[in-house]
Image (cartoon, rainbow, N blue to C red):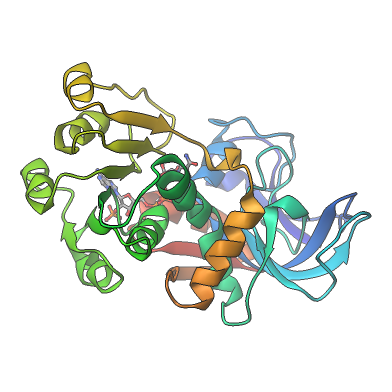
Length: 317
Ligand SMILES: NC(=O)c1ccc[n+]([C@@H]2O[C@H](COP(=O)([O-])OP(=O)(O)OC[C@H]3O[C@@H](n4cnc5c(N)ncnc54)[C@H](OP(=O)(O)O)[C@@H]3O)[C@@H](O)[C@H]2O)c1
């Protein structure tokens, strides 16, 4: 089968199209014939070595949507022919940029007929991240005010919809070009993250009880400044630099800061199943900004960090 692999860490050019053996599913695993594969910033962190890859050569990628074509011993609830999607791969095991992908069933859920493979691949990692941040860590409640930084990003555009579906009043930040779309999918207010008076504008929209911070490092002082008393702030940003929590406003307002990794989600399958229901109902719809053939994975990884787009980039083998 064809698979994208890197044999050494480095820039996008280390990704190459290899011909490799079709892997066999082990105990508790399924093999998925990939129809769509999500591209995430974290795929590039493993490729550069910023996050150490599990082994070399390595197939990158966390997300896949496709059809089960083989099941391993002890697998219950999945059979050949099932439409599924999965996330959490490419971390401690080989990833998803390939024609066939092995996944433990705990990371796999059924993909309803109403949802395309591209949408499933677009949703998986960012949907589980947004769920883990807003529902599990922040315990977001109806009628609370929720600030989502970077509302046009992969995580952001799903988080906006998820928070709105939970009954929160959502404020988000994004470049001007994406404001109309984000209002259409549930944001109460959309603010350009470049404006000088952003903190005032957020406070004027209502101090947030919950903040999903996709940048984290330099934004924690901002979050502390705008947050409501007893706000819960969840930081998911890249780990490249250190986040500083300002003591004054954080103590004064009893703020709770939480850092998290999507890979630590306890029950990925259950979260994916709930997200699938929301997608099938049209309540939370991931946006596929662009698709690429598998062979153009290096271009997609370049674009995910360097280009501006709304939603997700997806590979189609
Ligand atoms: N901890 C975890 O488990 C976890 C999980 C998923 C993602 N992440 C991390 O979270 C971050 C976002 O991921 P993603 O998949 O959503 O990335 P993405 O799709 O590339 O989106 C990045 C977003 O950030 C916006 N942005 C750029 N500069 C900004 C600024 N100064 N202030 C506010 N927004 C800004 C971009 O908007 P424009 O295009 O308009 O500039 C874009 O909407 C990444 O660092 C990723 O590694 C962590």
